[in-house]
Image (cartoon, rainbow, N blue to C red; front, side, top):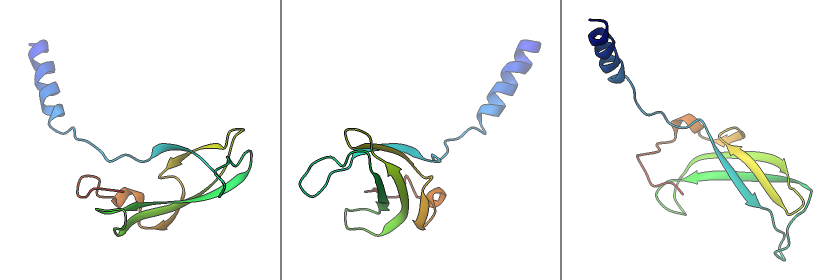
Length: 100
C-alpha cells in the first residue's frame, strides 16, 4: 500500500512540473581594439541586447556591464544580472521569437 501511495504522489506531483525560463546565462568573449589587438587587463563597458527575429529586429532586452579583461583580453559575465537599459530579462519570450 505504501508503494502504491508513493507512486501515486509521484505521478500527481510530476503533473505540476514545468520548464522555467533561465534567470541568466554565462557569456565569455575577447575584447579587441580597432586594430584587432586584445584589450588586456583593462576595465571595459559593454551593452548586450537581445533582438527579435533578425539582426536588425526590435530590442526585446538590453543591459550594460562593466568588467575587467584578463591577460589575453578575455572577459566573462552573466547575462541577466547587468544594469537593465531596456525591457526586463524575465519578460523575454524565449520560445515566441528567434532571438539575436
